[in-house]
Length: 517
Image (cartoon, rainbow, N blue to C red; front, side, top):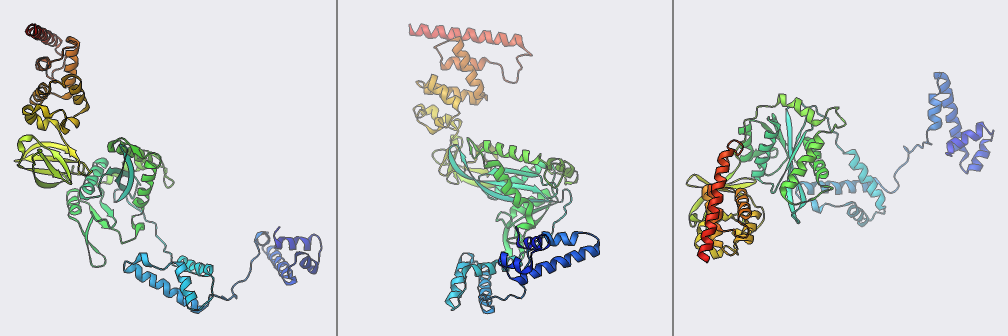
């Protein structure tokens, strides 16, 4: 039991004297007298007020000690001055970019001892901590209008994609009013990803926020002009010119000026990838991230009875009109090498083989590449963020392979072909590569999809088991109706064509057997 309550109980209930209480509790008799006098004063005050509040407050409070008259025995004013000098030197080093060379508390303690003073390490730590607490900053909570402000920031995360650990970046948008979040994954934290993220976000919200807030990221700030002025990058001015929003930069190391997205970055990353961090493809990881963010946006937070998604619906009425997607790309001119590829970022991408030795114009997007020659579109590739990778399309080499069919079997073009094409080659045409190339050339010229080619081969297998030839596949491909003709609309024509195809295949089979015999 607390000493004060024990004194009061024994004096008023058990009628013990002050001397006996002091002797039994082994405390000074003046302390006993002080507690009893304070109790009587509190009781008298309660009687005057007509309530038991003062007496109850005194009885339930712990003992209080007057420390105002105490003086420091070890931490003298001279030592305090030395400590302040060391702290000021630390601040100077921070300003000059020497943050990693500042003195820690243990270093300050060693410095004080080297000056001939005797003082404990804990005393130094307590004094420095008190100084830090007294210098803490207060913040003012802000009120935001619907559609007025949105914040953007990057976050780094490491995920296993296809069994290989990769460093990816989350672009996170957070509405200051609704706390609605939007996020996507990017392979790099560069200008193209910065522009593409804004494209996708404004398309998602179907409107444009009046002001975007950024910290001191290099994709938004080109350079610092003076102490406070910042020069925006060309990418930011282009985005602002297209979408017509204002921008604002935070001060250096002032995350509170962008507090919504600072929390969102950590929150979204943790919620999305703390349990699951391994995916087969980047697209699968993106799908998981989008599902997680959608779940977050449909949960009520503590400050509102509505979900962020519901608040965004209200906010859309105040957003500026969405002007449509902005083309976000870099243009470069590259030469095609002897492998009919161009090199971009250490990776090689294929083009049609007739362009060897020529120059092509490449539009580089955050997620892909588009190739042009003489202002004519040639092909597209998904952008590869690896190093020294080859991205080959077999259709780009069909002309060369028709002259060199023996090169097909061990080629990178075949290795990187769609799985269904590789399966057809290895199962039915491994012994006749020239015929397989002829089939692919025919499909390319007639714009026949790979799915239709696979279906046609399956039909040949049903009609002529064990005798799948190039001529039969091409014959059946040529006699099939085009995909745009609906079989349900023309059943009679479909049957007539199929019958004719079957008769042709049978005739070809008879001719083949006759020539063998």
